[in-house]
Amino acid sequence: MTRILKPTPDGIAQAADLLRDGKLVAFGTETVYGLGANATSDTAVARIFAAKNRPRFNPLINHFPDAEAAFAQVEVNDLARRLADRFWPGPLTLVLPRGPNATICDLAAAGLPTLALRVPRGETARALLSAVGLPIAAPSANPSGRVSPSDAYHVLRGLEGRIEAILDSGPCSVGVESTVLDLSRPTPVLLRPGGITLEQLSDICGTVRHADDYASKRPIAPGLMASHYAPSLPVRLNAEHVGPDEALLAFGPPLPGSKLTWNLSEHGDLEEAAARLFSGLRFLDSEGERRGLSGIAAMTVPRHGLGLAILDRLRRAAAPRPPVSGDDDDLADALG
Ligand code: TXA
Ligand code: MG
Image (cartoon, rainbow, N blue to C red):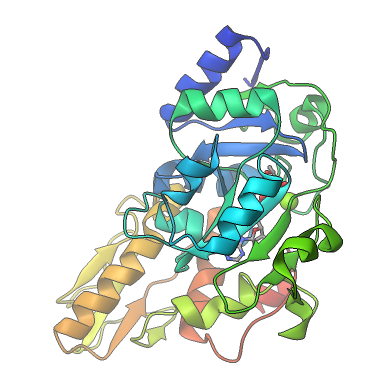
């Protein structure tokens, strides 16, 4: 059952408790309704991908009540501060290098060395974010491949029964997603046009490059960045045995003979596997290299539910170059 909560102090407090408890709560922002989860928990974030039925682990936007809380996660620069002064709270998302004190989990960042930050404008959204006291990862609250929701009823129609609650703050005023601007490079790059226009940005930034200058029409993330977060050890897919100098990424009962194993889920639970994927790759890569191993053998996972997103990610890890481009949902392509 999905509960509808009113935007009252009590409703907001209930929504905050659920989020702190690792549950999914959709909430209204000035752009669209977001499907929120505790961004510091791989397990909670895995639930977002499961509920949306998303075939890929795209990096998510992390929401904060104010700039101070947001910037505590990253290496902030001058331009970011000026943009935040001008446009936050509001429909602008800034991408910056992850900072030493960041608490955002690997799955929310899709393993990238950068984080996307946003301070939304809605009163209710900000009250909720203050009450939770944690960064909240929130993609649009619709099943993958469907239209973004701009009121609570849209959310309910798409996700009823799949999420704990909806904090109903009425219709969204902007109706399109936030502008995503990458400030982690020498020149700012527009990754996604949205609620703040290029003209508005240029006033403060000067030159802004388009993601198209770098690649196809799609944002640089996540496809183009595949090589950034690919492990340095080669990954071998669909492993049915483990070589003497290989580490094993297991799913379910592990293959025999491995000296270094990370089990995504001993019981074959896809949500647990998704939550443990990026930390597992990171671990096997660094520990495998330290021990002089030459590769990672990855067992396969079932081709349904979150299994599709896990396989997509493993394929990228196995063959990260040349860059993959494409739409969020072009599953057939991704799986070949
Ligand atoms: O208006 C919005 O931004 C809505 C509301 C709910 O706040 N949220 C939203 O979130 O659209 P999401 O997670 O669906 O947006 C993801 C976008 C993608 O284009 C993704 O590639 C980009 O943000 N993104 C996230 N982290 C990134 C990163 N580290 N580097 C580059 N792009 C990133
Ligand atoms: Mg969306």
